[in-house]
Amino acid sequence: MARSHGPPHLATVLPDLLITAIAQASLDWAGHVWEPGRFATRALEFRRTLQEWLPEAGSGGQPVRLGILAGEHIHHLAALVGVLLGGWTQALVPLGITSSERCTLRRRYGLTHLLSDHPGGGGWADAIPLGEPLAGWQLHALPPLQASPSAIHADALFLSLSSGTSSGQGSLNCRTAADLLWSLQGVDWSPYRLLQRPLLGTSMQYANARMFKLFHLLQGHHLILRDFDDPFRPEHFEAGAQSCTFDPGALRSCLRLGQLQRCPADFLCVVGADHVPMDLRRAVADLGRPRVGVVYATSQTGPLTWLPPEELLDEPESLGRPLANVVLEPIDDTAPLLRDGLEFREMRVRKTWHIRPPGQPGAAPVPVKVVEGFNPNDLLARSPSGQIIFGGRANDVFLFRSLLVSPLEIEEVLRAQPEVLDCAGFGAPSPHYGAVPMAAVVLRPGVDPQETSDRLRRLAREQLGVRSPKKIVVLPDDLPRGPTGKPLRRVLADAHRLG
Image (cartoon, rainbow, N blue to C red; front, side, top):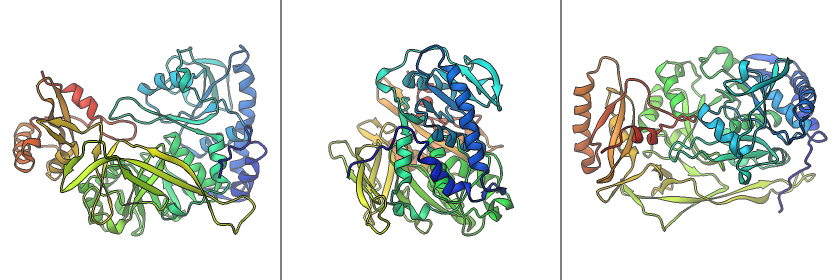
């Protein structure tokens, strides 16, 4: 079945979806109730704001490529719906990008203007204010940068950069308004039924996360938002929240601060990551509440596997089993990583979505193939029980003395020690060996750094042999991390390059 891209302007379609899904019902948001119609009213207000701004932005005769920088609250989500209602294809939502990514995003998209409700352009130092603020928003012009024509997306609605934590080259993730319409008009969501619970979102920092939450709202699902640093409060659960999305770093922080003890026993923490360390899994499981499930996903494909709470500790580093609409196939021409009796290889993804034919409520879903042959560049293995086991990022694995070494096996040994708060293994570039195993650790307060690092190195040598770290660097603060919370092993490797 051919994929329908929908009309280029959405004003004739989305109001009906919006009214039926949101406008006629009250909306609980972080324990605060929005009366019927308020969300739609705010969305329409933002559409009018854009209608006033865009003619001025385009008065120079040049194409307007507008970025919208907004915060973490529900009226920002309403602003996004306003973009949809207006049918503007030149608008994008570059949310949650770091300062190091801004230049890359501008070059790869050709941004000309920025609309922001943050004072001073939200950290975009070269943004030039145009006119007076309107309804709390300020339009800025951006000095031109040489864009990459091959990367321009004329119809982008959501545009963001993936972290690029391993390669240093963040990939461009693009979602169009047509993508959103197509998904809302009948995609069969049954493979994700386990995740369709009233959701407590920690933030809307990333464009893909904001789109996911918009799906929830427009499908009539319950959604509650709390600020990223806001602790769990009773009103979150009184409002009906049953699950929350986390990255491993955020889950570890909530565990350390004692926030997870406030969650109901059946509360579900959905951890979306390729690597959820076993020490973190055991620590949460020992609480007895909440429950933890792991989703393996990429920004290009969405969820690929699901590990339910009852299987959380069954197999080390397990990502669960592929969803019903996902097939993972090993790429046999890549060198395997041998570990724990398993052979880890890169895998290709084939993911099939199903759509229900419009106007035929009783019809069976029709398969629509949207992803085929995608390689997430992760080393994966299938265990005898059928679970997918994560062995590391292909870009992180390095060769030392003819052996492939994964940073994860170094980290697994170090994390088991009570003195270690956090750690990251990496291969330090060496002109003699190519790369040498090393590790960076963050220790608990009051621990002697030299004595502890020496003891950790001896312990690792006993368990890992030649693959053990030849040096352990004690960091005074946290590990360097990318915007998705992954440790920046590339940064550590560059900082500790061997002569």
